[in-house]
Length: 515
Image (cartoon, rainbow, N blue to C red; front, side):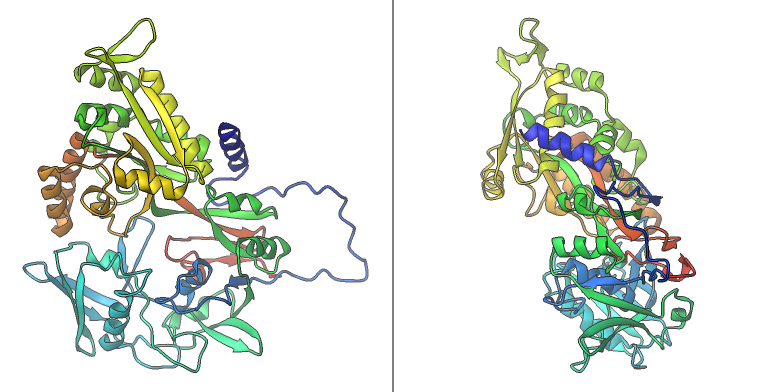
């Protein structure tokens, strides 16, 4: 039954189109009545959804729907483009101290909040310090110990450990707290405005770029859950939404729409228990990693909505080392040779691999409440079985799955993690998510060196780190998922969504004349 649903999911996902393409409408079971000749059809107005039950505060809030609006209302010191390079916005410049334990940032002059208040380092420091204790931002800012405004234009960020790519973490909204408005004020293209019981986005008169926007006003429609969001989009009450096509809810969108993908930091991977069992061998882990057909899995299981990756960093990022990554490319013959080097021989009678009369048998752990990951687990298991490995797939509820991980009751597991914008893999290699990962001093040292490096030195440090990673193979990355911005067909072109801002560069959109 699990295989049936996994196949059904893959087939359904195959109906979506990759990139910025037109989606074909689903056939209607009944004939659509013709419009009344004496009545002009009403144009669909560009509108977005929001969750009225959750706060609109961009730092304190945790509603995904409301957070998607934040890119239109707020700006940070930096923003990440689709190569995950930090681009300065409110910051004019930034530089680390000689020892790397602090960074100094100078703000752009002339930036104003939507009520005309000048942006100062005090507001930026206050926003960053608030983010350090918020549920959404605290994990990424854990190594920031303090943020202090030196004067109106300068602030200093203090760190517990050097980070040469700190600006990649500073796309945190800078806000001006106000009690008489629906949400704190920002410096973005729009501001929140309430009219009676309705909420709107209205262009920010103090943002010079707002004059080029295609919409002066964007109505906001209340949506309080996935089902309501789908219904609002299908009816036209909401005309743009984001989704991940590996999410079962994505299958609910049935209206005619166009799709534009954007890369994310959400990594799907295979974890190994290197502290015992067959996977304590580096050669075995390397072999298992090379047995994964990443491109095939992305194509068939995720319908192309992901970027295959052999390293725990997006291949779109400048720190991705293609030369090292190629050493883990899909190669079943190469994987078999590595297993032979580790002492395993195939038995002609049962086709299994043995070493000292002991079969190469592993348990692959996956959570049962995620059909997409179960399909990945089945595919990985099939590849290892082809090599001659005896694989048991153990599908558990989420609570039992996490308990088994903590107890080390696995040889391999299917995992997913959303990395920070600087692609720091520390949680998986040395931190709270390093299930079954044994100590590797050389890898840890290379990781620390890379995190602290910047400029040309960072590229060299990345090569050294990923060379160590390929040898140790503590985990086997599969891909980085892509999100998708869906917009009702025919409304707009020129979409350029990013992970943090689905409406990135809205001023460059081209809209139809009657919308």
